[in-house]
Image (cartoon, rainbow, N blue to C red; front, side, top):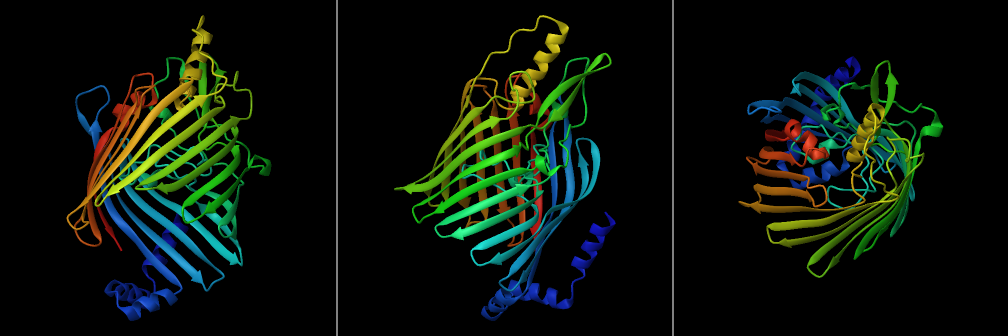
Length: 439
């Protein structure tokens, strides 16, 4: 903590030449533009205040779900053509889920080196795979945090230490990843009610042995008319399940990751006035999913999307499907122990979206830009026809000045009680407001 604070002091007290670079960059002269290309570092970031408000569960009263102030610094260093480095650090203070929050988060910090066709990146990174909008079954490298309260959906993405390499042979690029130490996604497990006699414990983490690392490989094709890739992942899924063990008279429930192999593919192209994108993944967990409740069944996930623009209006619409392989219905419990096992198995199927053998869903994202591109209206909607789960995320942003922006929006979950969205709806559904200044 002290070291990170010391780094912050260094960054805000950069030499006057750095301040001069920033001030002149704002002027945007042709001479300065050339100078900016030659400089060896960049410093930018933002400051924002955010408020989330919603309903107190099981009451008709409102509460503050989250409120905080946050400052972010992004720092990039270049060393001619041999490589560069990037770091983003965030400082946040406020209240979340009724508790005081004061944290320093090193979101990313990595170094690149370039040698001909070969690129190498080492450090704490956020990796995003897939071309579908918001739902990416091939994206299994770094974790996500479902409980993050932010108007920016990308803030749910978390980093992890990994080694990432590329071999560039245009129009083909080969990417190889190694994640030596596992980091789990943050699940809303504390929001899921458990029957009496069942308590939630800490996550059961795999050891730091190198054999528990994850490997991923992707072959990407980039053409003028088609972008696509095929990929393979083998390692611990960032999205864990939950397992149970008897402790005294109670059943102790612990989040527990599992190994999985994922073969995936994605592509995007243009057909006349329409943009077309698709993504597919076959997931095969390792282990006895029939008897180990935290391990989901193998499944197939597939997404097909269309994109169209009409001037200032755009629309992305997607079909999202899933087929669970070797699916069996849960048997009704016949005893107290069977009841507990039934509850754990049911909750795992809910988290893994495997409550039904086949499920069908759609997502839509219309957007509209007005007032000389200063007013931005966006709406993201998701509906699962099989589970009847719904997510609405409207957002309106206005550029008050070039660097100052205000945002209003909401995030509304809904669904039957036995579904994930129906379980977390009152705890996470909220309206939000943000003021943000960038530099």
